[in-house]
Image 1 (cartoon, one colour):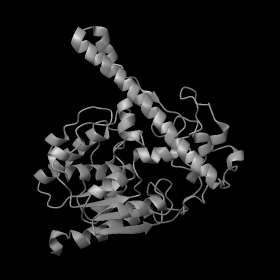
Image 2: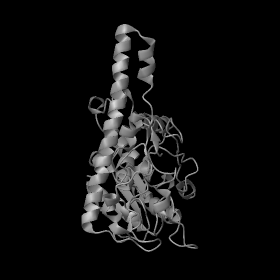
Image 3: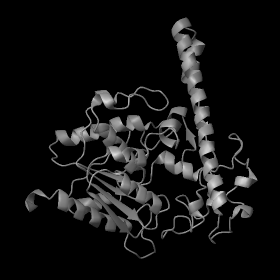
Image 4: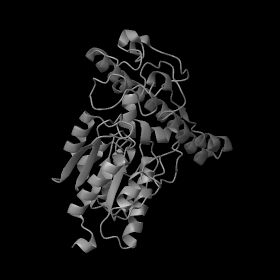
Amino acid sequence: MHPRQDFTHHILVPELLSRGYSVWTQSTRGGLNDVSLLHEQALLDMAAGHVFLRDHGFEHVVSVGHSGGAALATYYIEQASRTPGKRETHAPGGRRVPLADAVMPVPEGLMMMAPHVGQGQLLMRMIDPSVVDESDPMSTDPDLDPYDPRNGFAEPPESSRYAPEFVAKYREAQRARVARIDDHARKLLARADDARTRYSELGDPRDRRISLATGVIRMYRSDADLRCVDLSLDPNDRPYGSLFGRRPDLTNYGVVGFGRLTTPEAWLSTWSGLSSRASLLRTAPGSDLPVLLIELTGDQACFPADVGAMTAAFPHPDVTHVRVPGRHFGAPLARGGTPAAILAGEAMAGWLGERFPHQADR
């Protein structure tokens, strides 16, 4: 399961089926539309899937998380492992979520392929902090422009070279931009809440309309992770470029990208690296179960430092880290190579076989 994608035809499905394992896939209630995606509501969707599997007699259930599906899975496991009274009661934007009322079966294990640290945490490394006016996609602070040669950018495909001082300043500015958008989102929600209160007291239809008109947040320029153009930063086997293309200096200004259009609630729950609770590093300590983490060595979203931090964050003694050559979406590193999804499927089957043997193998 993934918070924003339909995994019905996921590349790992045939790999696991061909090795004798049943596979359940599902989407969140929003499907492929993440404009209003709340991770807390997605947990309820995931819980329904787990209940279905238990009700249909599956003895062992192991969650599979690819990319952003990993942080969703650990958030679910963290909440499912708590007693109902200890679960989250509200999303970051204030909406009540009835996790305490939900049946949330805990899986027996977790397998992850190319897990990144969470939607919000990833975006906070990709967001362009040189934007000075959120209503103007071309507004730029030249001192923070990642694609300005004066700051270390080199003409593609040559790798850029950013000074440590610039990287530190850049990361701080990224957090500051996320904080500003958070503040804007909370102001929009507060305006709607105030109107809702007035309507309950005075009954003015206009207040009721205002309470529903929270608006949407447009967020420009989110393809600006320095690691995608400076291959010396947290190096691995990745090629030049980002998840969105070979020229982040161009795609950064296009319409494709993470978090470009969201409701204030969805921004806070999913895309804010400061407010979202769906951070793998935050939820991993509450996920006490056997874990398989498959790192794809040419990943452009899950980097070696992230892998080290994630592996160390899980409390269970049975945490296995496997490195597989490949790229984030399961492709081989080079044309003609073995797809990473096949190699990952082999690793998953071996890991499962050791811990949850087939009935015939017992």
